[in-house]
Image 1 (tube, rainbow, N blue to C red):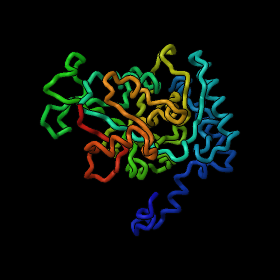
Image 2: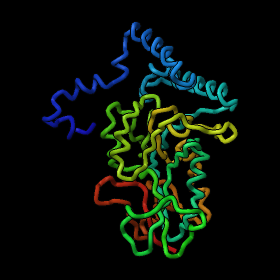
Image 3: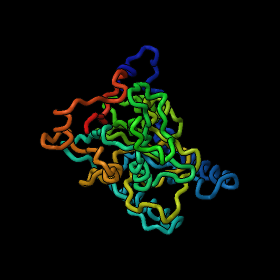
Image 4: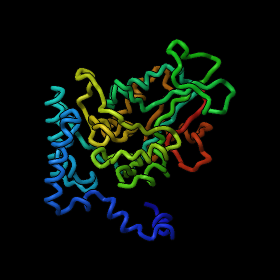
Length: 319
């Protein structure tokens, strides 16, 4: 948490409260608690589906940032085995690290977006989001030409109303803010900013309080009210631990700029799905990147600039 919170006179017990909120500290050294947790899981099993009852290993799993290389290898193998058992899908869990000297940004040309929502469905397919109920990371806003009030826009318009010349279309997703309010409000530090600026979530550490969802001014967080429902044949087996692996019931999730792809030299799925070239993605710190040249040349704006989140998702109007 920032110094402004640490030094706030209204929070004199900051250190003590942080210790209480740290699940690792809460459970450390308590064999009796392990037994109690196992018993609780057994007691809950008649009330929940078997796959919804967390194992003791899952309950006691450390925060991602505390895991050693061996810890991660063991956890990845456990997740892969669980997916194989439940879905008969040979998943491959990876954990690509941030690329040194990179700061990924998005530039979206509203003048070229036709509102087809191909990006929405490509994102769902790539990121293993629930199909029933549907969880979508991207909302494409349909805004009347000349309007400036996005709050009155529609994002659930019928497919046959796309490409209407009386409207423009504005996709909105996680803005990967430089000053993200979602991180400040998380009581267990289950969400944080990586070295390349991407905001991620530790699904095993998230307690589902939904504070981050309430804090996000872009409506970019999604909560799993039920276990994500995905047909086995629709599962993308190439999964990143901090991005598109299958999520459990009761946790938050969000766009990560497809970090399992972008950190190995690929574009996000939504970028590749766009039929008009409205989406541009790249490394802002590379002076020769396409996004850097666009930002230097074009007149750009960010969504809700007045609130000071400093998004890394930029919009331009150009044909």
